[in-house]
Length: 321
Image (cartoon, rainbow, N blue to C red):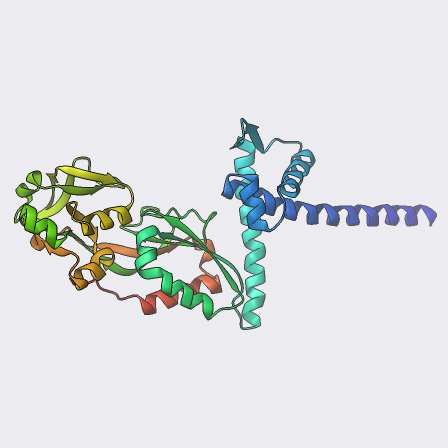
């Protein structure tokens, strides 16, 4: 009888120990994933609302417990080891399952809460999405929205973001994509530039004009325009080249040259007379603007809520100029 009691006592200690270890590992997992996503201990600590030393200690304890190096620290840079990369994916899956379970309970209580991570293209976010996301946040006081910004096509791998807004055809076939609207790019310039340099009427004229060219995803040395029923590349003379569409928009407003910019970026300036569109018959085809999210977020109430909100509020056709 005494032996049985000792065995039961030892088992109870082991169960308690395992429970404690599990709790510590969950906290460490959260810190580990945050470090990888932020690519720094400082960024992870800021995101988690704690100190860098706490985050570092959790990672060190995790590596000691696993007896495996997860992150190499060389000259101040973080490099994920092969084991760390595999463990990161498992940690993400575990944390997503926990969050999904919490969301399920929130559904029973009729609420939307927690953190929603959204990635948006910079210029489209500024011109279109910012007021909509603010309105959505105001109507869901228990929801924290983290917004990441990309220049054009925001990556969505299911680890860094719950959902992304992407311009152009989604390339990741493993993701769920819902088209919200379409956008078309137009050649435009300020009235002052056109008065000084003349108005181009065909793509061949572009070699004689100052052009403001995007270096983000553009064809080297030219613009792709519609001509003779097909999409063709035409050489342009570059005056300014930038990866930032906002920079090109301001440059065109100031009279530096012709720019090929999306309708949502130039709509206000065209309406006010600051910019004029030219060669409209050569405008390239429309691009879809889609919300993209991984299958694991399909049942997420907060993702469904934002997708439905954007689908209802965003016009389904390209802006007419």
